[in-house]
Amino acid sequence: MVKSGQKGANSRSDSDKRIKGKHSNFQEFCRRQYTFSKLHGMVLTNLHPSFGKKAVYILDCSTCSETVCRRGMLAVLVADGKTELFSTDRYDRSAVGVIPEIFWAKSCWCKIQSLACLKCGAVVGYHVILPCVKCLKAVNNGHRCMFHNKFVSHCYRLDEEGGDFLLWKHLKPHDEDNILSRECLR
Image (cartoon, rainbow, N blue to C red; front, side, top):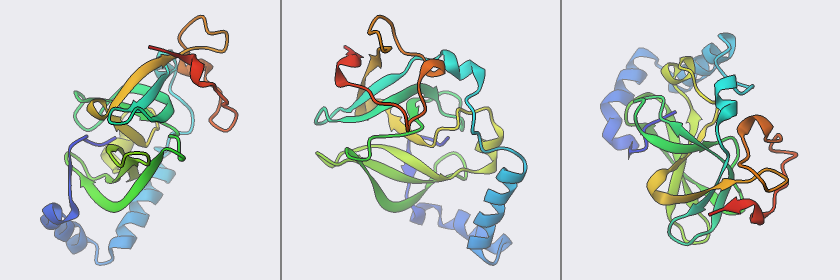
C-alpha cells in the first residue's frame, strides 16, 4: 500500500504539523481515518477475483536465506502503480520481527513499520499499521505486509500434489495453511 522507499517521522515534520494543525488531537485523526475506512467498506476481507489468478511465492531473506514468508504475492504498489514488490496476508513471525519505529510512507499518508529478518537483522520489508484513505479507496489485495524485491529472493510455491504452481484462489486461509519447505521450486 505504500512506497518501498521510506522516510523517518522527522523528515515529514511539516506534514505532521499540517495534520496536527487540522486535528488538534492526532489520535482522534487516526481514529476518524480508521472509522471512515470501516464505514465505507474499504477494509478488504475477501480477495478480489483478479488476485486469485496470481501465483503464491515463498520468500527468503536475501542476506541469510532464512524463509520469511510462505504466502507471498507479486504486487504493484498502490501509491505509484509502478513499483513491484511482494505482499502477504501473513509473514513468518518466527523469522521476521517488527521494528518499533513508525514512518510515514513516501508517496501517501500510510503509517508503516519496517520488518527485519530475526536471523541476520536485515530489513526485508514493512508493515502498514494505518493505511491512508487514498490507498484504501484504490483497488488493492488487502495485504498490509510488503517485502522489497531487492531484499528477498523468491520461488514459486507448489500445490499440494507438487505438480503445478499454487494460485491464491486455491490457497487455504492462513490459520489452516500447513506447508512443507519441499513445496518450493527454485
